[in-house]
Length: 131
Image (cartoon, rainbow, N blue to C red; front, side, top):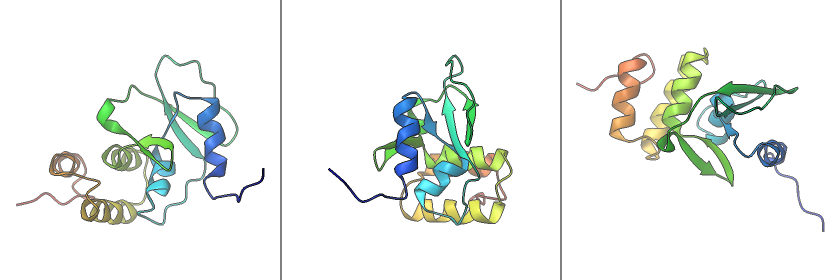
């Protein structure tokens, strides 16, 4: 049968093809819909020992994710918002976009107090430390 295409269709195939892949960085930020960032390639994190090779249009990062750093949205596995913001900050994503995402993430309760305090210690320009 046929079905209507969605803007996420191009992401389901890479995840089915590489079940260990978790969408990350600007791709995850785009999936959260909390900023205007548009990823230039599909970013995924795979386990450090996975044999996944680079492929066209996909940026592969290797890391061991902790259980709390991973979540599911729209049947896609992606990094938690706190991990996403930290990864994006480290890779040079626009600070204004990340600040907006953090504020909206807090409002929607996608970031808890522990996430916010960790982010404010590491990235005070993105999450202002609370007094």
